[in-house]
Structure formats: structure tokens, C-alpha cells
Image 1 (cartoon, rainbow, N blue to C red):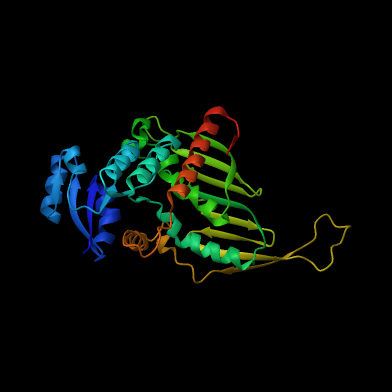
Image 2 (cartoon, rainbow, N blue to C red):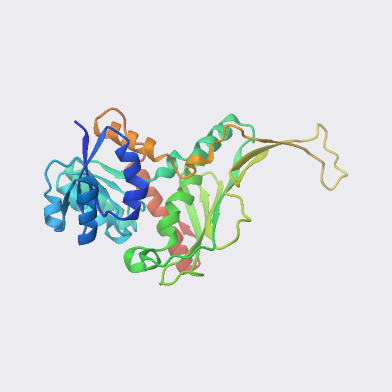
Length: 338
């Protein structure tokens, strides 16, 4: 029997970024939609032939649902996830899983008490960038990594709820789960301290549309992640090691390996080095922000007991701690210790 799905929220994200992968996977069957909008419910019923719910209590009590996919404004994620868990349903929570640590703890308690599974949606852990970089770093070709820079830049404006703090808007919660989590996963270490900057530069509303996070890991590695207002002048990635550098820009990944001279001349200001640069031909940028098909295959395996989900609630909680620390640092101007 396929995994029976109910969407909670059925807007553009559901139709464009989730449904195409679910409808092509025989492990899943779309069964129901909860949406306050009458026109949205009518579209869901007519296009997909599913049950629809206008009443939240009725949606919580919906029968024959194996997985609820929560795609609402960020401010509703934690409360709805906890409600559906306690109603006996497994839940997938789009990013951010929670707006703050208190909300993350609320979800974890509900999952523990209900015995149901909660799946944080962090597709960038399935990113082609991340997997390729992990392979190169593990090979040792650039030596020991001491700094990672992860950037995204745009002059694009938004005019939706993502610009309003009341809905959990802002680019820290929208892009932080991508840009901050990936460097942390690459080095595989706990973040020990955070310095953050946030600004509102272009968008309307009252939420930030720019952030910069400077993180130090438990062994002293520096991780820099930012969403910024800039033309396309920045590299997506710069991974710096003691023996070389990896860069990703304009869908091209390059590895530069440094050869130091056999003998160091103490009379010279700086000794010349040899740099050999090559393009990584095996790098495939098609899944820079994650392979959604692979994520849903993993969720199906977790629900059927074949394999654990790759994103634990504990690791999503650790990410929320870092996001909270970026916000606190930006507000106080101080480094936050974790």
C-alpha cells in the first residue's frame, strides 16, 4: 500500500517543489489537502481528485493519512507539526523546521510523546555541491580545511509574507537552512561560537533580507555563510585548505593544489609556489540545493523501516541553535557562545 499523503498548505511550493517528485514515486499517493482558501481547495479537488479540509480540527482527525507535509508560513510550522504528531500522524516540516529553539523543543517533545516520526526538510544535505566537496576534502588533496565560505547574492525583491517577522519571514530562516547548514555539514563539526550581521536593504516589510554568519567550530575552523545584496561577483563556495583551495562559481567547480618549494629561502619576503588548477568534470550542478526525489525515497524508506532518515531532529535542533545565535549576535553586536 502506498504512503498516503496530506498537504497542509497547498500553494506554489507544494505544486512546484514537492508534487512533481511525489507523483512520480509509486511509494506515495496524494490523499488529502488542508487549505483555508476555498479556491485552493477547489483546485486541489478538481486537479488531483483528493479530499479537502477547510476545518483544522477535521484535518487533524483525517483518517487514512500516513504522512502530513506542512508547507505553511514559518510561524505555523512548530505548532502544526506538534498538533499532527499528537493526532497520530507522521509529519514532514518544510524549512525552517522551527523559528527558534523553543519551537524546536516543542516539536521534539511531541515526536517523543507520540511515537511518530518528524522529518525536517533540509534538502541541501543531498546537494550535489556538498557531496562533491565532501569527496574532494576526504581525499586530502587540499590538505586540512581551515576555512569555508558559502555565499549567495541577488538584487531580487520579494513582496510576500517572507518579508514579515510576524509570519516568521526573513532571509535568515529562509536561506539559513541552506547556506549555514551546508558548511557545517561539510566540516562535520559542532559550531562553538557565532558572530552575525543582519540588515534590511531592499525588501518591504520588517524582516531582514541580508545576513552574514561567521562561525567557529569546536576545533577552530572558520565558517562564513551569507545571503547578500550583490551582483553575481561572489563564489558560491570557497573551501580553503592547508594545501589548496576549492571554488564553485557559475556552475563550475575547480580544485587548485599548491606545491611548496623543496627548499625555503629565508632571505625572500615570500617564497614562490606552484599552483595546479583543474576543473571537476564529474561535478553535476543540477541538484545544487538538493535532490528532492532522493529525499522522498529516504523518507519512504524511513516510514517503512528500511533505513533511517538522514536528517535527525537533533541535527535540525543544532541548526536552529545556530540560527538563533546569528539573530542574537546581530541584535547585541556580541559573539554568541554555544
